[in-house]
Image 1 (cartoon, helix red, strand yellow):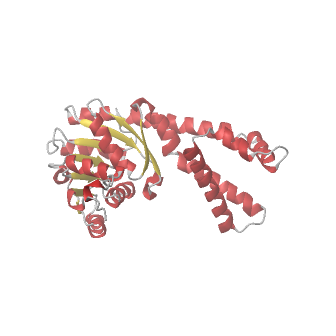
Image 2: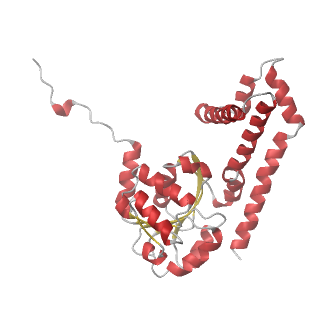
Image 3: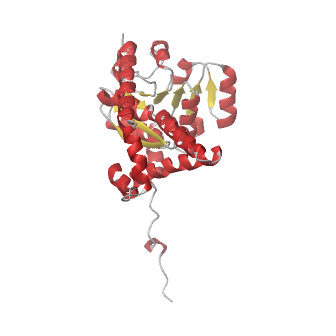
Length: 298
């Protein structure tokens, strides 16, 4: 009987996730997560859940000790209220603070911060230039604009590299936010538009879901059932766009049969100005984001 050498069996390929985690861990020996509120906890949960970074390498800070105690007990990380202690020796600093808190944080920690540390900021409306200026040295800064579905790992995050960030720095950011959904890399000049579209977008979608559900209620459906039908319809339609890569207009035409029901509904939407109203909503939110950026830089 012919025997088979064990070496002749094909080696099991390392998964993309495992390879990414290994590369991440080879570079990041200590990660400081500053501001572990709702978004910060979502980031923490995503990183630990995907085994991107070991628990013992993560240190998080919050404003109040009871919150720190909760995080330490739930996730097993080191948690406290001292930002300078957290960033000391950290290879990677993930900032999840309110915009108005960022300048004070940077002023407080810049002497304790390693000059070669990578700083990933998820603080809305805070530019990489502002962070570089406040730190006073060529810092490795990546700006992130996530949205709330990151909390259930279905998020959309746009990333922009600062003046001194390397491709490896951006790759670290993609690993972190990729554990919570999709990521794209854009020029920072597009971040206001991203804010108006994908960051604010979930609120527009919730309004659409609510409105569709109200239509079902108007026709006699129970509210809970109507909401489920509405939400799953948007979820499935969105997934079809992403998975097929087809233009939304083409997918819309697939549903719209001649002299059918859908075309009557579409005519009502066009007459009501839904298309123009949504475009205006994105533009208005982006304009507001630009105003907030300008106010932060003064």
